[in-house]
Length: 395
Image (cartoon, rainbow, N blue to C red; front, top):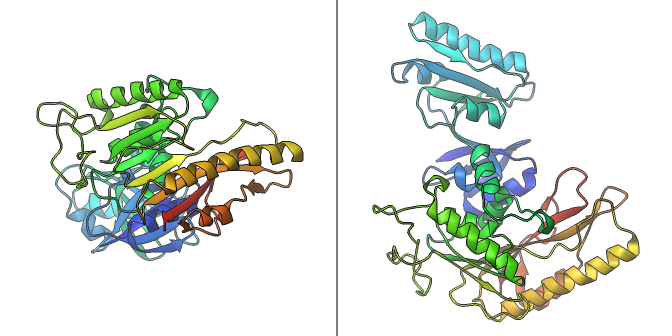
């Protein structure tokens, strides 16, 4: 079936995420993409998409008239070329007028822009969960029905409520952690995702919530203690959304010591493992089905570094990345996906300077899937140290 995605703040990264897990992905318009999926996609597993929608198989009025009895809450987002708040609101009010004439009660969500924000859609219940709370998307003459809205409250809650956080080591956004995992491709449920620079465990947390086993290592024991505490919190609290069995116990999604990730889980087995170790020389347990991580980003900076400082940081960070990939190459099977975010530094001209390690990476036995790397820089406006996402496969 064909679906529409409203892409996130950095659309090239959002598009790459969709391309890694769905078929027939294509850019539809600025900020929009279409893709095909055999089953209804779950937006909670997509860090880079703000909304998902499916194409209406009927005219919008006919669709709304066939909704169950009761009050209808309706919002319209217009992504057409000449869209405006007035035009979008006018479409909604026109539908309301006809429905009211036929005896239906309708509340229209106000358009402050041509498209409803994620927060507006979410807080008005237009996420597709309730049949009579509907957001319709208009793209030129094509109508789509929203089936999922990114739950910004859930992301904030599981990020900020974690018991062990450390702003000094940087905080990986849960959305980006999901993207890094998804860029590994379609992994079987219960696959083991390794993060060799696990920090406070954000990638591990998102891997667990996505149905995978989580395996983390970090050079600092303090970070391992933080990850352990955070993952125990995640798997113990019912409100975090971690899957549970009939008894209420957290359940693992596969047997980490088995080569078959689809084997029935042992409800007493922990679904995660963390250990202290240096990624450049550590020997990891098997199996390792995918690697998703944020590598060492170097020193935090508030201003673009001087050339001598930039050269020093590049050498230090590059040596760690190359050392890690050399060590990893000897321990994973061919075609194992490896997705790593490495640092890139803002320069005075507004461009970012990347690590120059691609030739070395290929010599270590990896194929790079995004050789241009254009567009896969993750950063906030004026952020000095950005995250440069590299997508690899073991040869």
